[in-house]
Image 1: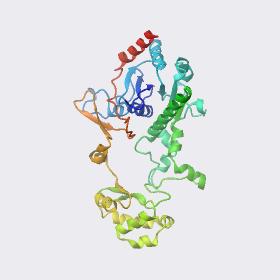
Image 2 (image 1 turned 180 degrees about the vertical axis):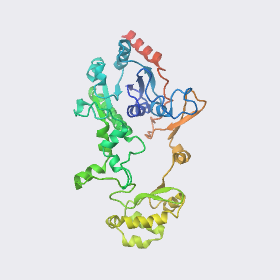
Image 3 (image 1 turned 120 degrees about the vertical axis):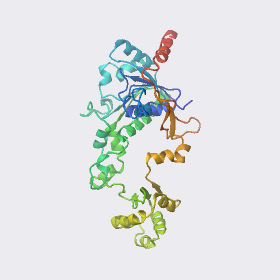
Image 4 (image 1 turned 60 degrees about the vertical axis):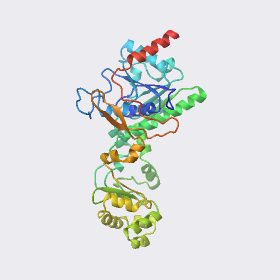
Length: 390
């Protein structure tokens, strides 16, 4: 039993942002019903596959963000399917969708309509530019993806090397961070309903979320009136707080304060640097020259040697590959790699576990992702029984 095992979520989302949000809810025990359009979520066919895409039900992309959900295939333009959808809404706690603004209204299934069937419903949307109900703008209705959100929200302008082009982050933070915020909003709305009996509309826009995600860039612009730009792996107000090439890879050193700097200089056998640049402002003023000294020292160390020499004194870590992550005992001890069945393959696969840890109701992936329409009989049978009881 998960912490959210009392909740049913009707999930109309597809691709990444919405499914990640509802995956978090499913990991915490919610009964998530994935309502898929005819043919299913468009990412079902996306790679990677273990072996044979023709035999396997879906690829790793779909598996990773749809684990532990139930699936039913419905065409909301079909009257019978529309009625089946509304029967699911009547018993739901939450509906989540990530269509463009106005899409659900085309089917007369927008928030206002659904609350006629379920007055306490929490209706949540993830859109590129938010919903008019919470703040109307000229961008609503435009399509958006992670790349668009990162570009507009300042993430790309502040990511990458100073002499390089604007660069997106590797993971799709425009989707994932927005999804996480949306999940928080849903849980806040659930708490509000517990206190008042009122449902409400929860809206999280990707562009809005990226402005929050850019963190210091916003206040730097406000305080200094200058647009922050790319700094590579360095930090605008700390040094050394950067990545350095070693003999066999890269490692990061995060000498956050003056004590860390002194310890680092001691390990390097460069007490002269500690004495000459004892404070952060002095180090920042001379960061280029100091970086050269650190680079000379780091390149003579292996990753293991550098990190071991600083252990317990200065925060440091190797820049790991995914192969190294899979070999890390810490990752396994924290249940951050979870085996699940891959339908159509004769082996299990591993997906990322849930980083939210709880002592009494630990979140966890609750089985593989569903086959398309796998739970139709179970779901519509439940609704038929409920209608008969009424």
